[in-house]
Length: 377
Ligand code: FAD
Image (cartoon, rainbow, N blue to C red; front, side, top):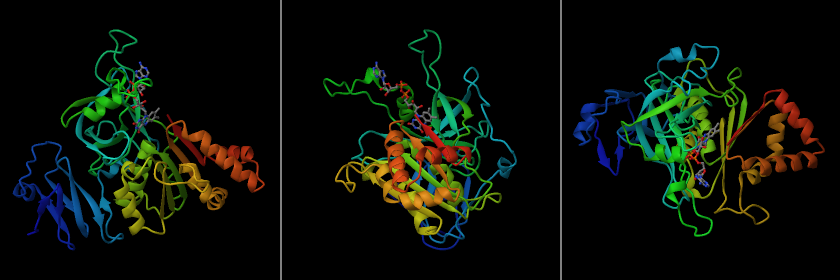
């Protein structure tokens, strides 16, 4: 019998041994699981000592032994297709999915709010890592009376198996778009973003219209399981990489045994704004030879010129290594706000010139070799 102590939404479980968490265990902890999407038994074949309850779902936060720790996923039929699923549900016939949970991802000192949203699609909107879902917020399109809102795209932040490893959910990482009046500096809720606020305000059980999946640019190239992947993100741009990294380091997928290098550069405002930092830090500990993680905190760190530390400053710091990896066939990905690209491109161009190379030629070669993946919005 495992000794479970519930404190501040954390279940402390004794270290060692396989662990089965059953409904009854949670009932004993005064948690009531009414939700139909809750799996009656979660068996975690792990040596783990720390689990967190996220809106009635248990998420393993810390695993002691990497080699034995990957989570079995199902159904493995999700590996059979040779082509990714595309636009299974179009805007005229969206799929009605159900919100499982909405969780604030950032700490109190983060400017703005970003939420992790788990959506139950019951296996009806399958996707691959790196794809996006479309969401149609409820209500009328202000520009076309009587018509629904336009679709908004969101990168999927989970693997095809979802956060519960059963192929039934997709997770999104959504930042609320809040409008501040430039004259008064005050929030004007009438101009806040429609869909991001709908998503961040939604509650478990709410219905949501989804389309897709869409996108091929950010698919994880899996032919070579030993490839190098350099992933550059600002803010919610980390979403597809969370999916990649769970596939590489958290899941046990017979058809994809990652043995290469994944290097994540994440730029956010401050420590409180870091996204999925606990997962990434754990991979660093468990897979030090296969994972690197560098962060740029623009409001807390300074670059070498004394200015704000942006993601391109981190790229510059490691530019020699990055260029060598690219020359050896590494994939490089960029995801996040559009505004990140000019600064990054300028840095890469400057570094290339310092090395006596033409950035234009290098870039066109990277594109030709399908090593260059950009999804900015
Ligand atoms: P909208 O209602 O569309 O408004 C857009 C902006 O205009 C808001 O900032 C709003 O405050 C402002 N605005 C509204 N009215 C006025 C007005 N009268 N005057 C001035 N400004 C006004 N976003 C994420 O958070 N996470 C992701 O993972 C993500 N992935 C994406 C992937 C792709 C491929 C693309 C294309 C986009 C992605 N986005 C993502 C962005 C997302 O699609 C939406 O654009 C974003 O959430 C804003 O949508 P909204 O409906 O909330 O805002």
